[in-house]
Length: 194
Image (cartoon, rainbow, N blue to C red; front, side):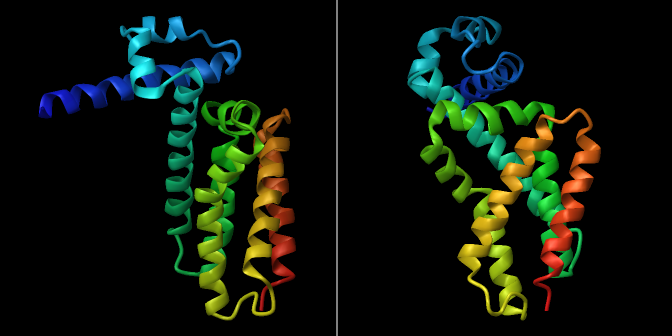
């Protein structure tokens, strides 16, 4: 039984790894399931057994990416004890991770298109948006944003970060665009600083 679980985990991991490469390179619509299973040395049956469909495999890949981005956000935010710096570092980490070549097409372009806006948004609410909400709540308890609705502020900032990431992903100079975006975000947030 133990070996069966290990084999299953290995199969799932291999399929997600190969699928991520294909979804990144070709996009969802031009990715061919037969090419994924061929490269993974598996069968279509393995995909259907573990993921149900190509769309299910895509969903699993996107969930993996969102977990990676969330870990990066938490890791970068933890570089400081200052709550304000944590917020800025976390925002920077989100934007830079979202526009990485290995993430942007799946996370920003195909994610909402393939899964639908409501599913994609729900996933975002359970990932990056949840971390942002928790950070803002912690800050409010320490005297920041006292007169503001944290729910509203979370949605405004999350929307700004997502839209910025979409814009940055399409610019020719990503690094410069990230810096411009974070400069503006810092200026906006400074207006709320107590």
